[in-house]
Image (cartoon, rainbow, N blue to C red; front, top):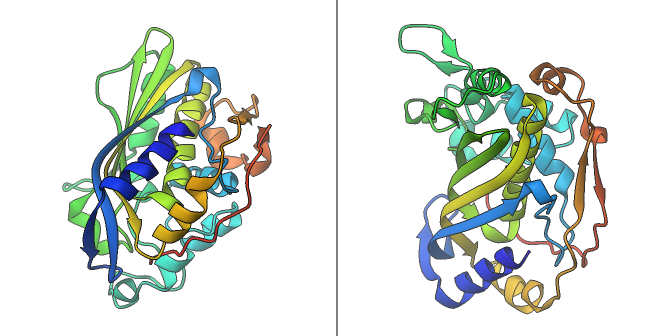
Length: 283
């Protein structure tokens, strides 16, 4: 929680105004932020200075790991974050590759589970990682990448958190996650939850102990229409202790994640929080 507050304060005090062409808004921006999450100690990095809807973050990552490419599929598992980008992004609505309502194109999980090969076929990056780690193998390339410039034109949005690099030391699994861009008031807590969850769930299904998750953000920003709420409301609040995430121990394989797992398999204990803050969202 303190890492989050420190980054917000840093952007407020040191951020440089940058015009964002996609949204038509200005952002206060800093370059490079490094956060760490002690997954081994169960320190779930959920924001307490406002109510955070953590289940949607887990549902979104679950959809990525299943390779979903349709906002309707995400809604069905409890995630609504792709509705706007799939159906309200004018550039995507005009794109010849869009298949129709709710189609997201070749973004995020599609790349993770079916990266197109130039000579035909596809590569299932995530299955390779799970298979290797389950056998105790770390080939120094246990990398899940959603960033495929060759197919940006075939999706509604470039990935923001684009690469996850797993490392195995003995029986302990670590994760380095890389994010090119972050809307700090709205997106960061979502992404924090996902980095923590990704290490915790992959460690569980591959039979390892979770270690530390390292989260690097390149461009961290606060939009101009979010700044007042951040300064006058959220940064004035005192944080509560971190809650604990409980994951159903019966989840033991990639097949489990792909087939029967729902949000009912995840519980939060001890979540105290301040009231929600309705930050503006930029499509």
